[in-house]
Amino acid sequence: MDTTEAVAAADPASPPAVRDVDIYATPTGALPVYHGWQAPKGLARRQLRERRLRPGGQDPVAVIECRGGKRKAWLYEIERAKPIRPMTFAKELALDKAMAARQTCPKCSRRYYHCLPLRTLGSCLECYDGTPAAPGSYMRPPGEHLAAAA
Image (cartoon, rainbow, N blue to C red; front, side, top):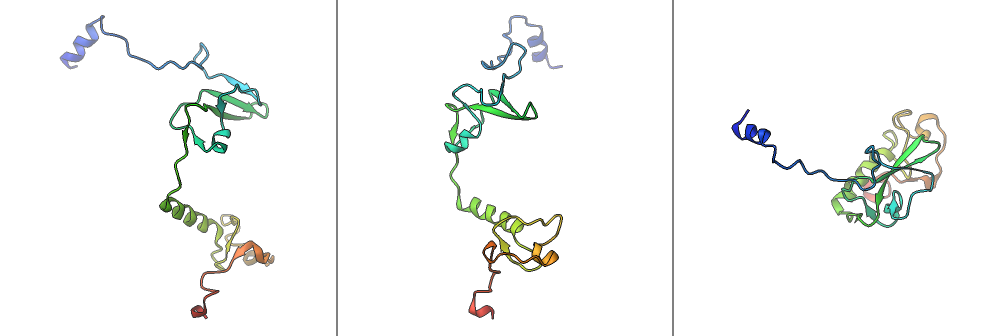
């Protein structure tokens, strides 16, 4: 043990560690739990996204329970929420690449407008069992519409 640590430990006049106080916490230290739609005004969960806000690093101040306690969601203060970050071009490209991997059939190379069951079936339904896909449910494969690809 270092001598400065020994002096600090032996000095009873040293102030106690400063701790944040949660004004919403109950005396036991747990967050208050609300049922259904009974949360007080000023607290939100999904409503933050509707208002184009995000929690912004703040800790949840309460919990809301739905479906008889089977589902829980954190509630945040609306006043302390921050605006959502704008979508950058690089982030948009990364999201499109990730969605393309989930929406493109590896056999026929069609990109659908919905995610495919690639883990269970491994392809689109048309390639798997011959179920015809609606023409409006997918995009043309790359290069199909180009004259140079023919």
